[in-house]
Each structure stands twice: as structure tokens, then as C-alpha cells.
Image (cartoon, rainbow, N blue to C red; front, side):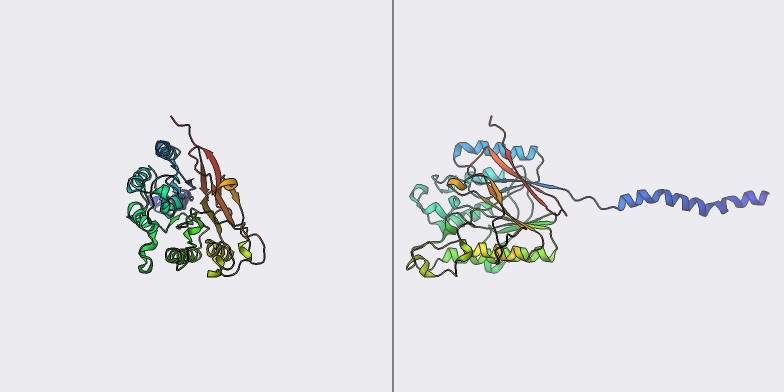
Amino acid sequence: MKALRRALPTLLLPWLCQAAMAAAAPHALAARAPAKPQVVRVALIADVPQWPAAEANLSALLDHFAERKLNLVIHAGGIKGDTESCSDAVLGSRQQLLNQSPLPLIYVPGETDWSECRLPVNGGFDPVERLSRLRELFFPEDATLGRQTRPLVRQSDQALFRSFRENMRISVGDVLIVGLNVPGDNNHYRDEGGRNSEFEDRREANRQWLARAFSLARQRDLNGIVVVAHADPHFANGWEKKGRPTLLDGFMRHRTRDGYLEFKRQLRDLSARFNGKVLLVHAAGSGADSGFGIDKPLRDTAGKVLQNFTRVSLPASSISQWAELVITPAAASPFAVVLKDAPAPN
């Protein structure tokens, strides 16, 4: 009997160890379980501020985004009004304003920011020179603007496109955000004749940058791509039936050459071959097209609507409204966009 009592702990030890391991197993599995992907919330704005008096309102709006605990701000271009000067003083003031955003802020240029600076009301500047200055002021680092920055990749990392610092990409969960310089004055295509060197060089840079983004998204099996540009590319102007652009468009045929034709064709072709969702975000146009809108304007070469492509047009020149983009990782429909009212100014 004494021998049995002495042997009992030894006999029970394996059973006790197994019981302890079984009890701890659920906790161990819970500890090893991957964290649930977080929903990402992004503020979308464009064409603000349009005048100096609106700077305070935009500053308050940027603070509002932080109070709502959003993750990111995207400014789709238009940091000054169409009658404001393109001087260093104005551009510098707007850079400081955006850079004071409490959240990381992505900015892509619009036409009032550089390409329309040639107009007398804007100071009669050389647009190419103003674009160079814009790049120096707003894109000096491989990071977002804002007091809390995030690293990103710029096209200027490629030797062939060293000057195109405004074109960028950043990964947000299982989505890639791509920024392009596509201004709203017919993509800065000039009708004066001769070589459109700025337009042609930037068109090629944009083409390669967008193609690279879709290639990366396919390689990484990403769920979606967000393309951000300022211009409304005019999907409803019958571009699908147009042939290859030539110099005759502006002369013998007496019609305006569509500066967005290649951009639209590339979006169509890349989206048709992409398994995920594509969201194009741009500022609203003028006139009847100046409001917020969501639609599916792209059709494939057979005329069928591309269901994986969605376009969001942001409110024009409105400091009282903004749009919230909610990105849900691994969802069948990862993008949801809702129009929001800004808080009333103090």
C-alpha cells in the first residue's frame, strides 16, 4: 500500500500534463489566431480652399477628420481658386495648410495649381515652371504630407521619370492607392501646334505608372485599386468610337483633341483584366457635372459595363461637404463611399 502511494504521483503525472495541455489549448489557439483586418476610413476632398478666407475652414475640417479617428486624407487637387495668383506665396501658404493636417494626407495636383497658371488672372506664369515649383514644395520626401506621415513610393524613384514626384502609390491593407497628375484643362493638351512636350512626357509617365500599379496589384493578389486624379476625364463624350489621335484633330478636322483618350482606354483595358475592384476618385467638373456622384461609366470593347470599375466624383469647391471612403479588407465589395456634411464653421 505504501509502495502504491509512493508511485501514485508518478502514475498520475502524464494524465495531469495532458489535462493541463488540453485546458490551455483553446487559449493558445486564440493567442495564435491572426488579428482581424481593420477597416480603413479615408476622407476624400478636392478643390479646397478656393480663397484665403476658406483656409481656416479647411484647417477645421482636417481637425474634424482626426476627431472622427479616420486613417487618411486624400486631396484630389485644386488647392487654390481659379482667379487666385499662382505665386510662391499662395502655393507656400497652401502647402503649410495641408502639411498641418493631423492625419497623413495625400495630394495630387489640379489644373488651378499649375496648368492654368498661364492665364493673366493667375499671374501669367509658365505652367511647366509652376509644376516644378509645386513638386519642390509639396513632394520633397517619399512620404505623405501631414504632422503624422506615412511612407509611400514615388515614380521619381525611377531614373527615367525622375521629375514626376507627384505620381505616387501606397498600400492600405489589401488595396493599392495610386495618385496621378491629370489636370482638368483637357489634361494640359495645347492646340497651338508643334510638339506637346509636357503633355506627351507626362502622358507616358502616367501610362507606365498606372500599368505598374495594376501589375503589382495582380502579383500581390490585392483586392482593389484606388486611382486618384483631379480631372473628370469625360467618359460620356463618345471616346470609345474615336480612332487614334493625330495632328489632324486640331486642324483639318476642326475638333478638339481628347486629352484624356489614352487614360480612359488604359483604365478600361487594365480594369477588364483585373480580378479585384477599381475605384477612380476625381474632382467634379463644371456646370451640371459639379456635384457629388457615383457611377459605373466604363464599358469593355464589346459594350458591356465593367462592373468592377466605379467612379466617384467629389463635390466641387465645397468646404461644407466631403466624402468618406470606407475600405473593408477581404470583402467582395471593398469600397463604400458616403457623402458627409462638414461641421459648421465657428
